[in-house]
Length: 299
Image (cartoon, rainbow, N blue to C red; front, side, top):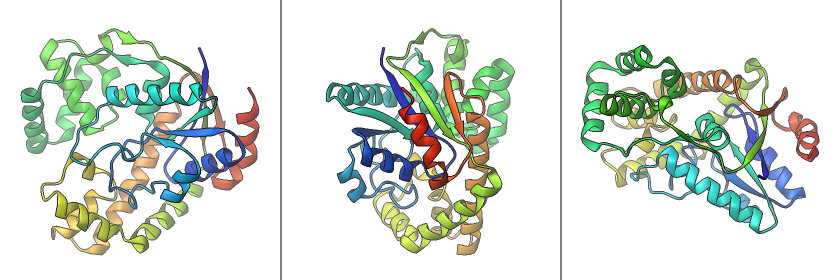
């Protein structure tokens, strides 16, 4: 079984730039582990690698779907493993890069073999989410399976899927058999102090507005007047609220800053418990380069 390198960590910690620098000096292809980069048209708010960067270094699992198309973790696993296998067949090194911890964990730990989705039950759960809020659904899941509640991480889609399985079968997802991973992984996790990361988060949000985040969301809403789930991503849902008149522009910015920081904190909590062959690189952005280079070349 081949060992595949992974570069992950909290948002705005410098993963993309470091991965591109590695790829400029080594025969790498990048396999994204980011839940928002799969969607076409979500470019500025996700800090998606530019067309020039993607022309210079092959990227996979980016721009594979329209925003209205559903995408499950099972689909991610299938496509990511296929991409990794194809990169290896070409004699190159696949580097998995991203901040969606659930994707990274699924690649390295395997995926529970769950029953097919039940659309009617899912719609009922979505109505409950709108009526009663996320806390009530998380409490129901936690009462039956704290392990599944922890894995869902207050992500609405994961909470709904876990409850869908639980209500349909009486068994929580974590008690189903698990399909083993196809590859082994070794992981480098960028681990800067949160106080050092916060100014980078705020600066990135400022750049996103300067680059045209409002115009990007306006264009998406013109195509999708009923916003699809992809537009629930941080940076998009807050601008949607502003454009729909729920609050002013400054409040939208404040919400993006607050929600991005909260997301980064959740990423720290998630990656702190990352299993397997893990190295924490306690540096930020380009300062992490010497540590990353030594880690990568340690085969």
